[in-house]
Structures are given as C-alpha cells and as structure tokens.
Image 1: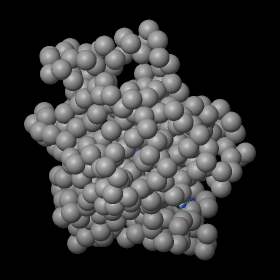
Image 2: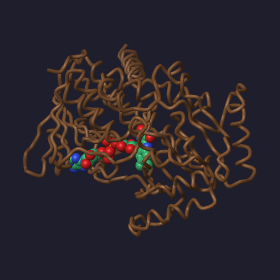
Image 3: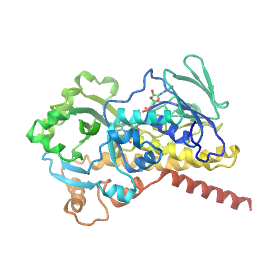
Image 4: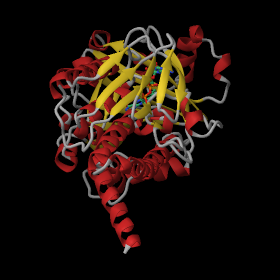
Amino acid sequence: MAPSLDAVSSLRIIIVGAGLGGLACAIALARRGHQVVVLEQAVELSEVGAGIQIPSNSARLLQSWGLGPFLDPHVVEPNGITFRRWESGNVIGYTKLVPDFRENFKAPYYVVHRAHFHAALHRRALELGVDVRVASRVVEYDLEAPSVKVETGEVFLADLVVAADGIKSIARKLVLGGFDTPPMATGFAAYRATVDVNKIKADQDVAWLLEKPSLNVWIGEGRHVMTYTIAAGQSFNMVLSHVDTTDPATWKQQNALSEMQREFLGWDPRLVKIINMIDKTLKWPLLSGSTLGTWIAPSKKVMIVGDAAHAMVPYMSQGAAMAVEDGGALATVLSLISDPTEIPAALGVFETERIKRTGQMRDASLLNGKLWHFPDGPEQRLRDESMLPEIEGRSFSWSANQWSDPVTQWWAYGYDAESEIEKAWTRQRKRGQYRRT
Ligand SMILES: Cc1cc2nc3c(=O)[nH]c(=O)nc-3n(C[C@H](O)[C@H](O)[C@H](O)COP(=O)(O)OP(=O)(O)OC[C@H]3O[C@@H](n4cnc5c(N)ncnc54)[C@H](O)[C@@H]3O)c2cc1C
C-alpha cells in the first residue's frame, strides 16, 4: 500500500510510457497516495546503453522521493567539469561540483548509466505500489472519459491520463487539438558511445582521465565531446556532437564509426586516441521543441509531460531532469487542492509554471550549442577570457560556462520544482480571492 502524503483525494492516474520521465512521474504521484498505472509499449523495460547526468535540481527531488537505496550504489559523483580547448586539450574552463553543488544547491550532481537510473526508478515505483505494465501500447485516447485503449483492445479508465510518450508522442497532437507541433531538427547530431575503462587505463597518455571522477568537455568549431565515467567507474561515456544538417533518413549507422573518427581528426591527440578505442557508436539527431500553446487537453483530463512536451538538445544535460521536475510539480500541485473540482485550476498552474521553466532550459541548452562551437577567433577568445577567472581561482560575476555562471547556476540548479509550484498555486489562489472580493 502506497503511503499517503497529503493528497486530498486519491486519483486513478494512467501514465503512458515507462521512460525516465514516465517512471519519475509515477513515483512522484504514487508517494502522494494516487493509484498509478504505467502503460509501456515495449515488451521489456530498457534504456539506451549510455550515460546520463543527474543535475542537482533533479537529484534533490529523487533523493527526497526515496531513490537513494536503488540509485546510490550505481552513481558517480564527479569532482568537477573541465572545459578543454579542442586541439590541445588545454584547460579553458572549470566548474567545481564537489563540494560546491551539494553546499549551494543541497544535492549532489551525479552521472550514471541510463539502465541503472531506469532500473532504480522502476524498483522504487514498484515499491510504492505502481502497476507497471509492459507490452501495452496505447493506440487510442478518449479525452473526455478519460481513458486509453491498448493494442490488445483493453480499455483503462482513469481520472487523469499523463502521457510521457516521448519525442514522437501521439498524445501531443491530441492535446494540441489535432495539429501537432513536433520537435524540429536543430542542425546538431551526436554520436553516443562507451569505452571499456580497462582500455583507457592501459594507455599512459590517457589513463590520467580516470584518476579523479570528472566530466571533461572538449569544445571547438561546430563540435564538442562530453565525457565521464559511469557504472560506478567501470565504463567511459562519450557524447560527440557535431553540426549536421543532413536528413537522418539518409544516415547509415554502419558508417557512423568511421564518420565519427573523421569528424574529430586534428583534435587533441589524447582525445583522438580514446575515440579510436570506440568499437561501436550510434548517430543520434538532436531535436528541440517549440513553446507549445498547451500541454493539457480541453477536457483537463489528458496531458503531456517529459520529452513529449519539451524536447531539448542535451547541452545543459537537463532533458530528463525536466521530466523529473514535471513529476514533482504535478504531484505537489494536485496535493494542494481541497476539492477535485479544483483539478483544472491546479493543472493550469502546473502548465504555466512548467512551460516557462522548460522553455528557459531549452533556450539555455541551445545557447550552449552556440557558445561551445565558435570557430577560433574573436568570439572564441572572448568566451575563453570570460572563463579564465574560474580556472585561476579568482571571483567572477559571469561566465560563458553556464555550469559556473552564478546567475545560471541559481536558476538552473537552485530551482526547487515542488516549492516553486506551491508558490505559484498560492499566488493563483490569492489572485482568485482578490477577484471575488
Ligand atoms: C545524447 C543525449 C544525451 C542526453 N543527456 C542527458 C543528461 O545528461 N541529463 C538529462 O537529464 N537528460 C539528458 N538527455 C535527455 C533525456 O534522455 C530525455 O529527456 C529523457 O530520456 C526523456 O524521457 P521521456 O520519458 O520523456 O521520454 P522517452 O525516454 O522517449 O520515453 C518514452 C516512453 O514511452 C513509450 N511509449 C511511446 N509511445 C507509447 C505508446 N503509444 N504506448 C505506450 N508506451 C509508449 C516508449 O516506448 C518509451 O519507453 C539526453 C538526450 C540525448 C539524446
């Protein structure tokens, strides 16, 4: 039996999609006492075989939701993020994560294997009594009932349907009234890969990369490479981004490895050495959504969250973190209502707050795609100069490194999705009372 954390009425909630976003929402809602069923189309739960960053704004929520015992054995807590010049690897920027992020934002900054993160969410969801059903592809929505029909013909009735069905969401079009606004190509693509750490350890030129747990980002014209260790230090994760305006339909995954090696010819020889250790890679298009007019169907009974609502390029490492925040905000606002008739108002507050927050993160992510990719020249020099104080240990009031920039740090990592939605709800209530008097 799930513990009740003050939800006034326990709702029957269906979540479509058991990705990181759907499971996070399920946990957030179940711990407030709602009855949650998750419907996942895949026959088996799984995630891409790569790493993911869990920034402090997400880690804080996950910890308070009881993920610790399932997640902590698998995470790595990097000391810092080092920005490096593309052709030499020289340090040009540095963000100290430990202990700064724990001290300032009251939560660690983790990296983890996606499969471990996904499994931790799944186990915690089951512990809270969530009914997770695989091989359950939703093929039809009834926005008014609300209900969903799965491929087998079975119909699931609920009080609220939350679609976390990813970037290719079918629910998004329905919520938007029949005209979809799907995420669009950004002109960026990424190769994703992992390298066995034993290969890196065996090579003196690159073994130093594993001495301390850290994130390293090489940045240069039109490209960057983000690296960190995952699986409690057993695997080296790499995301190699580049500008690519070709149609993904024309990509041949069998050529991805050699194309990737060509893209980074002439870069820091140590980085090239590691790239040459990669056995296989997957080329991935990076899409970004626009600000949608709504996330909620007119019936106020079906809504979208996660990548379905706010896909973004991964350059702030915040896509899944935003879905975790969606879950926290939704569960909190539903716990604040005193009567089920207030659900539409609560969802309205949720939508306004979350569209604003995720739009800001999407724009910051796109900005990194510009800042990191300058060709050598005046803009690159200005960028690098702005990061000098952080590597020289001098104080600074802004930095082109958004992980270090004090203003960005506070709005990105200091944000608490649960308390912010509570404040937004209180503001809305006060405005309502004011109008009535
Ligand atoms: C290269 C790269 C690096 C990234 N790095 C980070 C990072 O470091 N940190 C971070 O926070 N984010 C990162 N992200 C973003 C993050 O991966 C996504 O934001 C997140 O995985 C989205 O989760 P989701 O649950 O919303 O969608 P998805 O993961 O797409 O899950 C959707 C689920 O719904 C299911 N589904 C779809 N349709 C149906 C249906 N009709 N019926 C039933 N089930 C259905 C799918 O099978 C799937 O399981 C990165 C993304 C990329 C591409």
